[in-house]
Image (cartoon, rainbow, N blue to C red; front, side):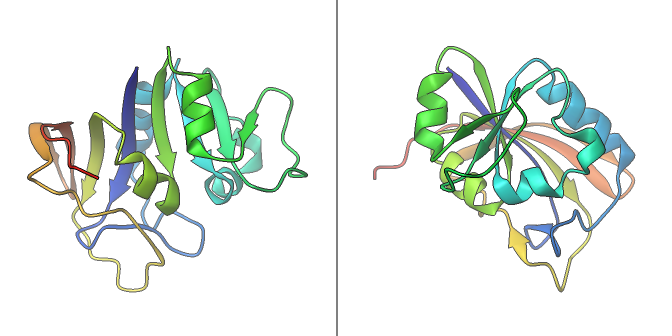
Length: 163
């Protein structure tokens, strides 16, 4: 099983503001599509709802929404699970992407083996959703591609913390 997290984060680890991305980076959207196509993407309900309706479900990937609301209605081609563990077990032989938001990232960073991060060269003062700190004793940067205003960065897990 391989679990990767895909996220864009600001200098202060902000990933969202009032249910939206606090930036518009077309190159990042293209990269997200490339990294997630053909894979299983796990997202929380708020992340699902933040995707404009005309783009949902994201095409050419299995969209999974995590919600404890058993009555929450989703299209037939979108799977729903009450927690990340059940979704991961159901798809243990597939490539899984942690897609957001904050609570999904906080839980999935514990089980992920790769982080594909777009580091946005901004500080978002009034953000309300954040990515967990990337602990450099656990994660090693293995690749970086600088751009104007952001970098694409890949990290691999080098250490399994004791829990």
